[in-house]
Image (cartoon, rainbow, N blue to C red; front, side, top):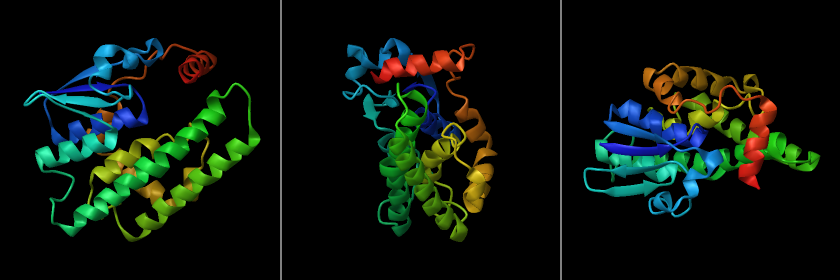
Length: 222
């Protein structure tokens, strides 16, 4: 049994999608970020950085934080979606995973902050992160022009990247400008495990207005 500590964010959805793909036995603990549950002492013992997602593997008590590290841990544990050590394909997979971790997620995340949540609009910041995210999308698009998936075979690189690309509309990006990325986004999004995992946990406070949501996240960022 694996305990998953998560929230309805792209980083959180990576792990729920992975667990669904693996058919793993797991229990969801949805943290309320607006109540700062991820900063409580009990959770900081699992992840000192106070961020979701994190897991605890009850087979041996192993706790893992950082979404990329969790995906590698689960892939190695279950022997799926990441080639074994010594297989050259493993390096290809991990480098595209790191591309998401170091580039796509942080840059699109910054775009979201300045576009949606900053108390004042800063045109330079919005332009900078919009253009940088588009540049990163173009790299993904080029890669997917020569391979069906980021590491040729479906892997944790795709699982990590898809939830961020799936949020393109929230970042006010035009996915149609990237035909190969569009094809990949649709194909991965049709996988039953991706559909299930993308809904875990459900988005919080679905009844709140857009203005209320922005104010809630501004409070988290302050």
